[in-house]
Length: 258
Image (cartoon, rainbow, N blue to C red):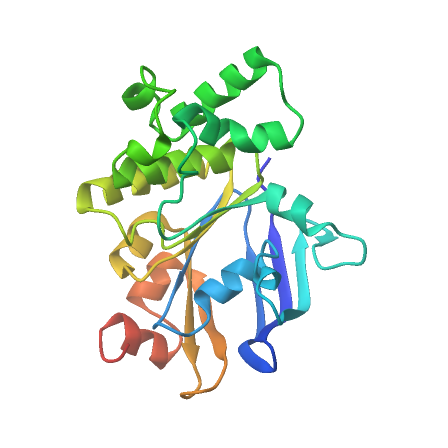
């Protein structure tokens, strides 16, 4: 079941350096929200705060609240590993486990969660590969290495791995930046299908991609060089691209800076 995210007053730090400052937003369940903005403005840092990946970095810390429905993910006693099971992540470069087969890549998280019956694993692996639109391409070579697939297939394998454990939210950090145009369109089609089951947040440098796949778009920017990134505005994607409320958003979208 897709869940809603409410962020309030969130700032993230690397040591003493503040990377993003006082961000508040709501991500609606069963929707695609795109983060756009120039390099270095904190989009990916903010994305990683949503499933507590940010604090994996030594010295990194977060202030503020992230609510998944009504649960504060940064509340006392909350297990970050459990958070990352609920909020899955797909990274910029495809990262299948290189020594594992296609099958074992998808099954890895399931086994960690205690699922060991072969029939259960078979069913979920097939369902996840179908969900990632990859099953027909790999069903006859499930025991071959995942690293032997093309770049676009590897990224869809990583999506299959992420959705196999049935997260409620799927985060994607520039999932198409390393892919060719045909593979990119395949991932975009997949994102549109997956939003029926998951809440999706995507970071992208490709504004056409944000316009094509997202329901809402958030524009991030730096107040000045060396200052932390800020959320400038968030709105319906059509409005952001046709009639933004803030001049800086219009300047960025029209190519006048960034």
